[in-house]
Image (cartoon, rainbow over all chains, first blue to last red; front, side, top):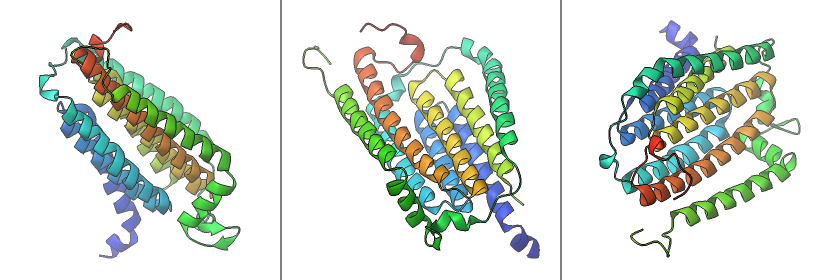
Length: 183
Length: 100
Protein backbone atom coordinates (compact mmCIF):
# COMPACT_ATOMS: atom_id res chain seq x y z
CA UNK A 1 0.00 0.00 0.00
CA UNK A 2 2.88 2.32 0.78
CA UNK A 3 4.33 1.54 -2.64
CA UNK A 4 1.05 2.67 -4.23
CA UNK A 5 1.03 5.93 -2.31
CA UNK A 6 4.66 6.77 -2.93
CA UNK A 7 4.60 5.94 -6.62
CA UNK A 8 1.06 7.14 -7.35
CA UNK A 9 2.13 9.71 -9.97
CA UNK A 10 4.33 7.19 -11.73
CA UNK A 11 1.60 4.56 -11.82
CA UNK A 12 -0.94 7.04 -13.21
CA UNK A 13 1.54 8.22 -15.83
CA UNK A 14 2.40 4.72 -17.03
CA UNK A 15 -1.27 3.65 -17.13
CA UNK A 16 -2.28 6.74 -19.13
CA UNK A 17 0.74 6.46 -21.44
CA UNK A 18 -0.09 2.79 -22.11
CA UNK A 19 -3.71 3.68 -22.93
CA UNK A 20 -2.59 6.50 -25.22
CA UNK A 21 -0.13 4.31 -27.12
CA UNK A 22 -2.56 1.38 -27.34
CA UNK A 23 -5.19 3.74 -28.76
CA UNK A 24 -2.72 5.13 -31.29
CA UNK A 25 -1.78 1.61 -32.40
CA UNK A 26 -5.50 0.85 -32.73
CA UNK A 27 -5.98 3.86 -35.02
CA UNK A 28 -3.46 2.37 -37.44
CA UNK A 29 -4.33 -1.30 -36.99
CA UNK A 30 -8.16 -1.34 -37.12
CA UNK A 31 -9.58 -1.76 -40.61
CA UNK A 32 -12.97 -0.35 -39.68
CA UNK A 33 -12.90 3.47 -39.45
CA UNK A 34 -15.46 3.39 -36.62
CA UNK A 35 -13.17 1.19 -34.49
CA UNK A 36 -10.22 3.43 -35.34
CA UNK A 37 -12.20 6.53 -34.30
CA UNK A 38 -13.23 4.99 -30.95
CA UNK A 39 -9.61 3.93 -30.40
CA UNK A 40 -8.52 7.51 -31.08
CA UNK A 41 -11.07 8.68 -28.51
CA UNK A 42 -9.26 6.59 -25.87
CA UNK A 43 -5.98 8.25 -26.80
CA UNK A 44 -7.54 11.72 -26.47
CA UNK A 45 -8.94 10.95 -23.00
CA UNK A 46 -5.62 9.50 -21.80
CA UNK A 47 -3.80 12.61 -23.04
CA UNK A 48 -6.29 14.78 -21.16
CA UNK A 49 -5.33 12.86 -18.01
CA UNK A 50 -1.64 13.48 -18.73
CA UNK A 51 -2.40 17.22 -19.03
CA UNK A 52 -3.83 17.15 -15.50
CA UNK A 53 -0.62 15.51 -14.26
CA UNK A 54 1.35 18.36 -15.85
CA UNK A 55 -0.65 21.10 -14.06
CA UNK A 56 -2.56 22.04 -17.23
CA UNK A 57 -6.09 21.57 -15.93
CA UNK A 58 -7.64 24.06 -18.33
CA UNK A 59 -6.02 22.32 -21.30
CA UNK A 60 -7.34 18.95 -20.05
CA UNK A 61 -10.89 20.34 -20.05
CA UNK A 62 -10.40 21.86 -23.50
CA UNK A 63 -8.96 18.58 -24.77
CA UNK A 64 -12.05 16.65 -23.65
CA UNK A 65 -14.53 19.30 -24.83
CA UNK A 66 -13.00 20.00 -28.24
CA UNK A 67 -11.40 16.68 -29.17
CA UNK A 68 -13.63 14.10 -27.52
CA UNK A 69 -16.78 16.20 -27.76
CA UNK A 70 -16.33 18.01 -31.05
CA UNK A 71 -13.81 16.50 -33.41
CA UNK A 72 -14.67 12.86 -32.66
CA UNK A 73 -18.38 13.51 -33.19
CA UNK A 74 -17.50 15.16 -36.51
CA UNK A 75 -15.43 12.13 -37.52
CA UNK A 76 -18.18 9.68 -36.56
CA UNK A 77 -20.82 11.74 -38.40
CA UNK A 78 -18.74 11.72 -41.58
CA UNK A 79 -18.04 7.99 -41.26
CA UNK A 80 -21.79 7.42 -41.00
CA UNK A 81 -22.45 9.84 -43.89
CA UNK A 82 -19.92 8.04 -46.08
CA UNK A 83 -21.01 4.43 -46.40
CA UNK A 84 -17.74 2.78 -45.37
CA UNK A 85 -19.05 -0.72 -46.14
CA UNK A 86 -18.51 -0.01 -49.82
CA UNK A 87 -14.83 0.81 -49.40
CA UNK A 88 -12.75 -1.88 -51.11
CA UNK A 89 -9.92 -3.65 -49.30
CA UNK A 90 -6.67 -1.75 -49.33
CA UNK A 91 -4.26 -3.04 -51.98
CA UNK A 92 -1.75 -5.60 -50.83
CA UNK A 93 1.41 -3.93 -52.11
CA UNK A 94 1.22 -1.31 -49.37
CA UNK A 95 1.88 -3.99 -46.74
CA UNK A 96 5.41 -4.31 -48.10
CA UNK A 97 5.93 -0.58 -47.54
CA UNK A 98 4.99 -0.80 -43.86
CA UNK A 99 8.53 -1.54 -42.54
CA UNK A 100 9.90 1.34 -44.63
CA UNK A 101 7.22 3.65 -43.26
CA UNK A 102 7.99 2.58 -39.70
CA UNK A 103 11.71 3.12 -40.30
CA UNK A 104 11.17 6.61 -41.68
CA UNK A 105 8.89 7.46 -38.75
CA UNK A 106 11.44 6.25 -36.20
CA UNK A 107 14.29 8.18 -37.87
CA UNK A 108 12.17 11.35 -37.93
CA UNK A 109 11.17 10.85 -34.30
CA UNK A 110 14.79 10.22 -33.31
CA UNK A 111 15.93 13.43 -34.99
CA UNK A 112 13.25 15.41 -33.18
CA UNK A 113 14.10 13.56 -29.97
CA UNK A 114 17.78 14.46 -30.08
CA UNK A 115 16.86 18.11 -30.57
CA UNK A 116 14.41 18.04 -27.68
CA UNK A 117 16.82 16.18 -25.41
CA UNK A 118 19.34 18.96 -25.94
CA UNK A 119 16.66 21.42 -24.87
CA UNK A 120 15.97 19.68 -21.54
CA UNK A 121 18.35 20.95 -18.89
CA UNK A 122 17.80 20.48 -15.19
CA UNK A 123 14.64 19.46 -13.36
CA UNK A 124 11.29 21.18 -13.62
CA UNK A 125 10.78 24.37 -11.64
CA UNK A 126 7.93 24.88 -9.19
CA UNK A 127 4.49 24.66 -10.81
CA UNK A 128 3.39 27.79 -8.97
CA UNK A 129 4.10 29.91 -12.06
CA UNK A 130 1.46 27.93 -13.99
CA UNK A 131 -1.34 29.11 -11.69
CA UNK A 132 -0.18 32.63 -10.90
CA UNK A 133 -1.65 35.86 -12.19
CA UNK A 134 0.85 38.71 -11.92
CA UNK A 135 2.66 36.87 -9.17
CA UNK A 136 -0.53 36.26 -7.18
CA UNK A 137 -1.72 32.70 -6.70
CA UNK A 138 -4.87 31.95 -8.72
CA UNK A 139 -6.24 29.07 -10.81
CA UNK A 140 -4.74 27.56 -13.92
CA UNK A 141 -7.74 28.62 -16.02
CA UNK A 142 -7.43 32.17 -14.74
CA UNK A 143 -3.71 32.23 -15.49
CA UNK A 144 -4.15 30.87 -19.04
CA UNK A 145 -6.97 33.33 -19.68
CA UNK A 146 -4.86 36.20 -18.43
CA UNK A 147 -1.96 35.20 -20.68
CA UNK A 148 -4.27 34.56 -23.64
CA UNK A 149 -6.12 37.88 -23.50
CA UNK A 150 -3.23 40.10 -22.49
CA UNK A 151 -0.01 38.75 -24.05
CA UNK A 152 -1.50 36.87 -27.01
CA UNK A 153 -4.57 38.91 -27.92
CA UNK A 154 -3.65 39.39 -31.60
CA UNK A 155 -2.84 35.68 -32.28
CA UNK A 156 -6.07 34.81 -30.48
CA UNK A 157 -8.09 37.05 -32.81
CA UNK A 158 -6.24 35.74 -35.88
CA UNK A 159 -7.03 32.17 -34.85
CA UNK A 160 -10.70 33.07 -34.54
CA UNK A 161 -10.59 34.34 -38.14
CA UNK A 162 -8.94 31.03 -39.17
CA UNK A 163 -11.83 29.18 -37.53
CA UNK A 164 -14.36 31.34 -39.39
CA UNK A 165 -12.63 30.66 -42.72
CA UNK A 166 -12.53 26.93 -41.96
CA UNK A 167 -16.24 26.97 -41.11
CA UNK A 168 -17.14 28.75 -44.35
CA UNK A 169 -14.86 26.42 -46.30
CA UNK A 170 -16.43 23.32 -44.79
CA UNK A 171 -19.92 24.63 -45.60
CA UNK A 172 -18.96 25.44 -49.19
CA UNK A 173 -17.37 22.01 -49.73
CA UNK A 174 -20.19 20.15 -48.01
CA UNK A 175 -23.11 21.68 -49.91
CA UNK A 176 -24.52 20.17 -53.07
CA UNK A 177 -23.35 21.81 -56.27
CA UNK A 178 -26.44 23.07 -58.09
CA UNK A 179 -25.02 22.61 -61.58
CA UNK A 180 -23.94 19.00 -61.17
CA UNK A 181 -26.42 16.28 -62.00
CA UNK A 182 -26.72 13.34 -59.65
CA UNK A 183 -24.62 15.08 -57.04
CA UNK B 1 9.99 10.21 -10.58
CA UNK B 2 8.38 11.18 -13.86
CA UNK B 3 10.55 13.69 -15.70
CA UNK B 4 9.99 15.83 -18.77
CA UNK B 5 11.94 13.18 -20.70
CA UNK B 6 9.17 10.62 -20.05
CA UNK B 7 6.64 12.93 -21.67
CA UNK B 8 8.96 13.62 -24.61
CA UNK B 9 9.43 9.89 -25.22
CA UNK B 10 5.65 9.32 -25.08
CA UNK B 11 5.20 12.21 -27.51
CA UNK B 12 7.83 10.70 -29.84
CA UNK B 13 6.06 7.33 -29.84
CA UNK B 14 2.71 8.96 -30.65
CA UNK B 15 4.35 11.06 -33.37
CA UNK B 16 6.03 8.00 -34.92
CA UNK B 17 2.73 6.10 -34.85
CA UNK B 18 0.97 9.06 -36.47
CA UNK B 19 3.54 9.32 -39.29
CA UNK B 20 3.37 5.54 -39.79
CA UNK B 21 -0.41 5.74 -40.05
CA UNK B 22 -0.25 8.56 -42.58
CA UNK B 23 2.20 6.63 -44.76
CA UNK B 24 0.77 3.13 -44.48
CA UNK B 25 -3.00 3.66 -44.60
CA UNK B 26 -4.76 4.69 -47.81
CA UNK B 27 -8.12 5.48 -46.23
CA UNK B 28 -8.51 9.27 -46.16
CA UNK B 29 -10.40 9.17 -42.84
CA UNK B 30 -7.65 7.14 -41.15
CA UNK B 31 -4.99 9.48 -42.52
CA UNK B 32 -6.84 12.43 -40.96
CA UNK B 33 -6.97 10.58 -37.63
CA UNK B 34 -3.21 9.97 -37.82
CA UNK B 35 -2.79 13.70 -38.37
CA UNK B 36 -4.72 14.31 -35.14
CA UNK B 37 -2.30 11.94 -33.37
CA UNK B 38 0.66 14.02 -34.60
CA UNK B 39 -0.94 17.27 -33.39
CA UNK B 40 -1.60 15.66 -30.00
CA UNK B 41 2.06 14.61 -29.78
CA UNK B 42 3.01 18.24 -30.39
CA UNK B 43 0.59 19.32 -27.65
CA UNK B 44 2.16 16.91 -25.14
CA UNK B 45 5.53 18.50 -25.89
CA UNK B 46 4.13 22.01 -25.41
CA UNK B 47 2.63 21.05 -22.05
CA UNK B 48 5.75 19.20 -20.90
CA UNK B 49 7.99 22.16 -21.65
CA UNK B 50 5.49 24.54 -20.10
CA UNK B 51 5.84 22.51 -16.88
CA UNK B 52 9.61 22.22 -17.26
CA UNK B 53 10.18 25.95 -17.70
CA UNK B 54 7.32 27.17 -15.49
CA UNK B 55 6.07 29.25 -18.41
CA UNK B 56 2.41 29.51 -19.43
CA UNK B 57 3.25 30.23 -23.09
CA UNK B 58 3.33 26.49 -23.86
CA UNK B 59 -0.23 26.07 -22.62
CA UNK B 60 -1.42 29.07 -24.64
CA UNK B 61 0.20 27.60 -27.76
CA UNK B 62 -1.49 24.27 -27.07
CA UNK B 63 -4.83 26.12 -27.15
CA UNK B 64 -3.91 27.46 -30.59
CA UNK B 65 -2.86 23.99 -31.77
CA UNK B 66 -6.22 22.55 -30.68
CA UNK B 67 -8.01 25.36 -32.55
CA UNK B 68 -6.06 24.67 -35.74
CA UNK B 69 -6.72 20.94 -35.32
CA UNK B 70 -10.46 21.62 -35.13
CA UNK B 71 -10.31 23.79 -38.27
CA UNK B 72 -8.26 21.14 -40.07
CA UNK B 73 -10.70 18.38 -39.10
CA UNK B 74 -13.67 20.41 -40.35
CA UNK B 75 -11.99 21.17 -43.70
CA UNK B 76 -10.63 17.63 -44.11
CA UNK B 77 -13.98 16.01 -43.41
CA UNK B 78 -15.66 18.51 -45.77
CA UNK B 79 -13.21 17.38 -48.45
CA UNK B 80 -14.09 13.74 -47.72
CA UNK B 81 -17.81 14.42 -48.14
CA UNK B 82 -17.17 16.27 -51.42
CA UNK B 83 -14.83 13.49 -52.57
CA UNK B 84 -17.35 10.73 -51.90
CA UNK B 85 -20.03 12.70 -53.71
CA UNK B 86 -17.72 13.14 -56.72
CA UNK B 87 -15.90 9.79 -56.93
CA UNK B 88 -17.61 7.43 -54.46
CA UNK B 89 -14.27 6.59 -52.82
CA UNK B 90 -12.11 7.60 -49.87
CA UNK B 91 -9.06 5.72 -51.15
CA UNK B 92 -6.23 8.19 -51.66
CA UNK B 93 -4.69 6.07 -54.45
CA UNK B 94 -7.76 6.63 -56.59
CA UNK B 95 -7.58 10.40 -56.17
CA UNK B 96 -4.45 11.14 -58.19
CA UNK B 97 -5.78 13.74 -60.66
CA UNK B 98 -6.80 17.30 -59.90
CA UNK B 99 -9.55 17.66 -62.50
CA UNK B 100 -12.98 16.47 -61.49
